[in-house]
Image 1 (tube, helix red, strand yellow):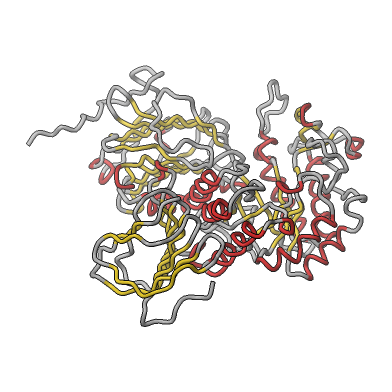
Image 2 (tube, one colour):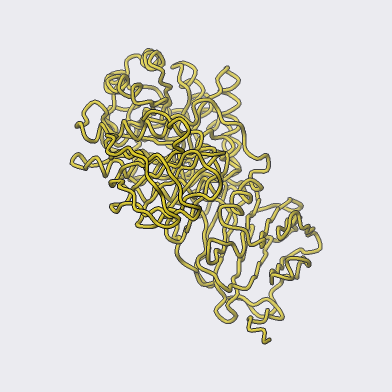
Length: 601
């Protein structure tokens, strides 16, 4: 039998380097050799490699006086796409090895990637734990050999620091291998979920923007509580009377008295309705009209078009100012937490920066100081971060992570939620606030909510001004999400075909299975015993359900997008495909006819 596989090159070759790069092989052996995985790096004498599970290697490096560089190479047979997490990241491409590098810091992205093969198998999963250091990654196909290369440079580490690398060639599925890699990257496995971090959120931004007032927030309170929201985020605008969408008022972090005459009173009235309050903070901005400009705070650069400067977190007095203002904001108003926004702006590269110290490391220190100050005042705050600053090095200070801004983009919300759940397992992942156009149908509203089904929904619409149809759709899908929240957020997550933007996503625990359908794909019933299967239909076609088991009798219930029950009967499922009459934006529930039906919806 002839071996048709491409031979591994005798030495590494990657475009842009000569044939003898200043890197030496790091011996792996065992499973790695059998699967064609190769690793080379600078300072290899300090590298220690161990196979920590079948096909999973951990390599520890000690940095030297020069930047640590490493290259991973593996045959790309059966490759489908190169995946790395992010709601705006391309998911269906195999980049060339000569493409532009991706820069990751503690405030920008997550250093995790996976070469995906057919049938959702992984050819390689990698993760790099370089703390808060800046890393540059070029990952792509070497055209000359059809090998896939991952080329990493850790740019700003000092000598004798520990850098950890994980390489997984186990061949497990995407849904198995990538979350395990995310858990490894978090080191401690993730902190316990803080009470309230998994409650649905009403955010004021998209429906009020900067024209937000205490009266407008309180107008929403009764309806928000009735729908099952647990938290209100008072977004940008509470600190200013301007409606100009700039940040000229940022830095003082005191409520505009004409709009919020009694912020603590508002917080108390929301709490009386069962709602927590979080304040938005544009953390790095010092507005050109802020009183704090007179305090002589250090700034890094100007955001002229935003009417603000960006503070320098490396300055002790500047950090102290932020810590005190944010602590006082939470403590004096009795709030439950803060949305710390725009943290990535602290790390924007600045030409001719006079300080050799890293603003990223200083931001990590700032976040630790904020956390200590607020907790020292007796409050365990809710803290929201959003993409792109979701790296574990800073994400450990957040109680929830949120998909980046994607107004009206249900697909981007879905992709961001699933990607973050894969890369940051155990952390509450929130949608970007869901909004819709005033003339959108109930079906389209349902699509938006189904796309956020496997995360914590944030919503930003005027609840009291909704027409009946979208209001019904919102109420129904909020009810579904609350009823099945434990399965949706903590069940085993099965996300299929990231290269197709996850056309089917499912979660199951014990004998309950929930699947959402975002494209005209067939839904296969689970082979394991089940008591209840829910199918949420975010496509315009009725679901084709495939039963691979013996024919069975099931109780079928169907609701439309507005939560009106349209069908209830006992049906016979053949050992093959069946079409269920589930309308677009609707829900089907299959349950065992000899058992009690599921919860009332």
